[in-house]
Length: 277
Image: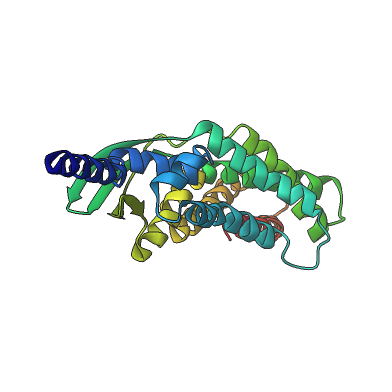
């Protein structure tokens, strides 16, 4: 009887221990991305991660913060632009991210209750989408300047930028190269959790999916380079045009081109900067 009781206790202990066993690290890594980026496998995530429901809600804040920052950036100034249009733009970008991006767990390094997961992330090419928007906006501004002396208002320019960028996002492509990123997870009592010092890494992973860049500063730098590149393209094109008036001196032509460039840059400056915020 004693042996039977001891056997039952041992089996019960074994079962309970098995119930507290965390899922494998590679599964936890995939589950985290599915919840963070694609908002899938919500219940599985809640079961596998410590305070899973709350942690999932915290992950959702990455998308919410991006939407808020994007909205705030595009609506800065006195221009009255439809929040619905801007919200539609951000929702379209998130939709494209969930439909077109991909990832894979490339490696796992485990030490006791810690696992460092290496991801290969193929994100959206947001920089080129903004480049095409800037190119189109400058072309439209140049054509309008040739046809009329009336300058477009800041509101009209911003509305045009939102429309063009939304169109570009609808056909946005993914980056050619994947981004390699490491994330450390820890586990306790059969549950995985994200250490506090890895919260910024999670935010950067979200940024990699939605923009194809690893950090906000990297996106800002890339967008600034895009503006310079497009303006230089316009400069080369304008200076390659023959003078309309044979009596126009080189200095006068240069001044006229510089004036047009300045007007075009002022009309796109706010839009390009807002998209990076």
